[in-house]
Image 1 (cartoon, one colour):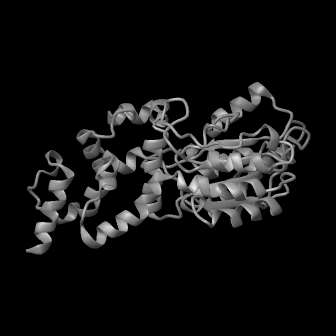
Image 2 (cartoon, rainbow, N blue to C red):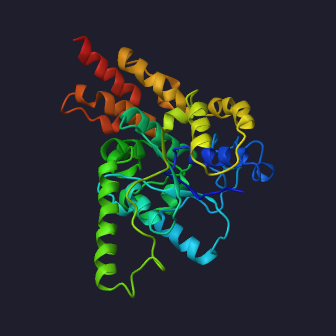
Image 3 (cartoon, rainbow, N blue to C red):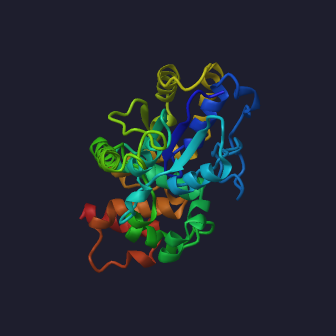
Length: 334
């Protein structure tokens, strides 16, 4: 079984379940009880859109750090597990949703945690890829987080062909879609220092209440943090990263041969990877493709690319994406 708890910190749409499966399928004891093929090949409300790895059962499920603490307190697991922690940002999101805040809490309850941080590399095209995954592969996120859906008034299950949703995404994209930046080392170090200061003062003056019998001693360093960008998971960069993780994390007894043979299946199933090449080509040609027309969020991304080219009085909100692109082209050609 696993030697340490593993915490995968990421927003929906960032392939965290696939990494969970890969670890389980590679662990000597978990491999035989882990499905051979985790890919969901037919969109449904239970397992999400095509391309999720949700045929691999995740217990506990992907949940925020507070629900994680509640789950642990309620279920009191005695064996080490892989935990999926929902950490994300969006405009004005509270710090309690951040990767750094989740790590701060975990470091105070687990003496030997292993962290995997999945992020967007601070690249807007990668961030938009994650957003596209969220809305097409796991729209249930917005149903479960009603504060987002209610505030912005859209139905994540029925927005694929909605011009209203498209316009909403253009105008409020930053406020709606979760994302994750690379780990902020200064921020997590500051949070670790805060705990050290609290513990030191309370232990000094109230050592009968605050001591190492019932609290973990403050940590000075992070020993096992492994970061990967979400687009690297769906590339040939993943297997070297995963090999490094299994060799250095000291978290289990691993054999990654099955995952090595399987990985290309996961890459092939990720339709949204077309985004990267197609948006680059669109920037060169301003020519729409069927893929860029295929979802309201993709249409929103196209409009965000060219909105600055449109006349100030042009009512893009009422027009099709084809008409909007045609108008932008006509401005350039004048």
